[in-house]
Amino acid sequence: MARELAIALISGGMDSCVCAAIAAEECELAALHVAYGQRTEQREREAFIAIADHYGIPAHRRLLCSIAHLAAIGGSSLTDARIPVTQCGLDESAVPTSYVPFRNAHFLSIAVSWAEVIGATRIYIGAVQDDSSGYPDCRAEYYEAFNRLAEVGTKPETHITIVTPVIHLRKDAIVRRGIELGAPFHLTWSCYQRSDRACGLCDSCRLRLAAFARAGVEDPIPYEARPEVGS
Amino acid sequence: MARELAIALISGGMDSCVCAAIAAEECELAALHVAYGQRTEQREREAFIAIADHYGIPAHRRLLCSIAHLAAIGGSSLTDARIPVTQCGLDESAVPTSYVPFRNAHFLSIAVSWAEVIGATRIYIGAVQDDSSGYPDCRAEYYEAFNRLAEVGTKPETHITIVTPVIHLRKDAIVRRGIELGAPFHLTWSCYQRSDRACGLCDSCRLRLAAFARAGVEDPIPYEARPEVGS
Image (cartoon, rainbow over all chains, first blue to last red; front, side):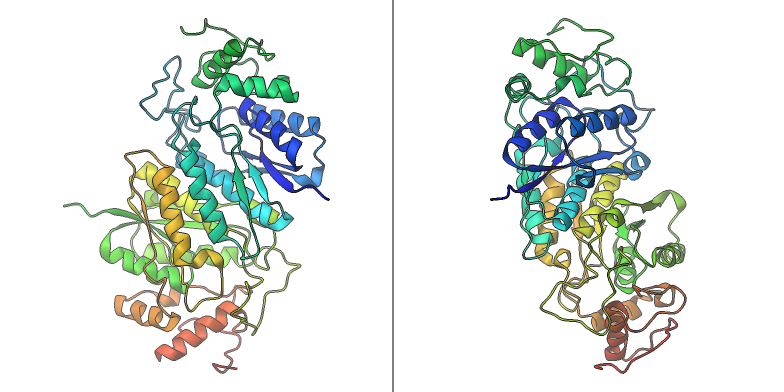
């Protein structure tokens, strides 16, 4: 029996890479990457291509989109150079400056449109709720709401499910799951600020470094600085 | 007291024009237009600008987006020249070829992102459920699902409501409501196929002509052909 076709959203970061590794165990893969004017857009696209190559995803099952409107709308340190990227300042009670307003809905809308045309039945996204940085669109209830939207907003015969296999994992558990599955962490990129060497200081770098440290694994990508965990 | 700020999605067609007229009665207006590689993209953009001018919407409250991915994904006669636009063939039991997979989610995602940044609390969209052409993303339950998504997917302090003031109106009632409010029908464009004179034959033209005929009002835009209503 043919395996189901799934679209994996691959940003180029570690969570989406492990999510793609999980999807590859369960389904045939198509891969979607969306650039949106974020600071490290080019570096993340390179990471996407390397990960898609690693999983042998053919050209007709890769979709790279570039959307200009999130940067035009602004409101985030990721897309507006005037808003500084938070450093060493994860505050669990607040939505961080790197929150891009309603960003994941843009990605998922593209994924659902594409899934309906190519006949994919699942969309894998590496959202992380519990051990992440406070984005409202990374919570399980958000994906429940999106699944309802996809069900009522597509053709009656179309049934697409958004799958969030790492949403309740801590970041260190994601690292361990990735190691088990042979996820190519060396090809990923997470830094919000730099594209040559990861800064080690932005929220994304700090979450990543702490996760690898707790998992007892060395992060294989190059860093400009590797602060002590917990500092 | 300052009026609420609302974003009106203005495609350039008659429904969104009347929807904007209703929004203008109730709120301060911002206006959003999204081109997506549809056949009559340029003509619809002209209609948007003319309608935004008519309502005196300032430049900083207008957002024109152009997205390439819906055309790249295809699956619709509106974005793929190889799929013919249905003519004289409204079949109420089927989703028509002009259905663009999950299209309205792309528009609404842009609107919600923008609303969160500019502080708009309402988004007006001229979706029509009952007397329209069978699009799954024009039904009231779809907008209920989107309102839930916008509530859980934005910051805790953000509250945005999608408003669908014409969703249960028949198209002829929309024409009458527009006449009452002085909506500038002469500036609108609905044809799916042509940009100089409306074809009069595509599903969109036929619905529009029938609506004006039932309302007893002459449609002020030029047509290449005006078939008898009911033919």
